[in-house]
Length: 136
Image 1 (cartoon, helix red, strand yellow):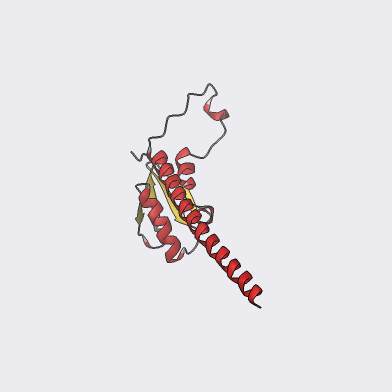
Image 2: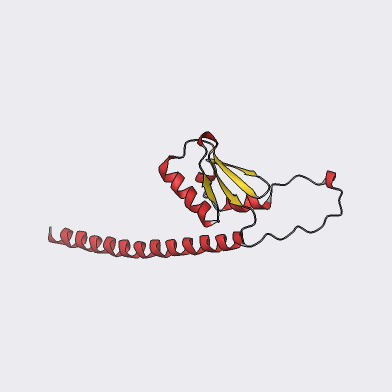
């Protein structure tokens, strides 16, 4: 019985050591994630470079989504991005919810939008987030 007790105590100590190590790794991953998000925000807030001139006539160029819209979409995790629609306007990218967001998702989206220099426009059913295209 004493031998089994020692084995259990050894295993318990090893599990405790692993928990400490995993907590350290988790903290490191949080720091890396925050750094990457910070880099992405600083990259997105830089003025967008004008595309190189094309030798093709305008009617033969394939339509592409705006770089501004794609850059803004990149700032949201896939689960949140799927809840939103993005529409390019003259000076803004308008972000509208596709469904009820709930308070937690709304807060995450609002925080990301504010981080990009945007804001929330409360207008009843027409409420939306907007992020300026030229965020300098």
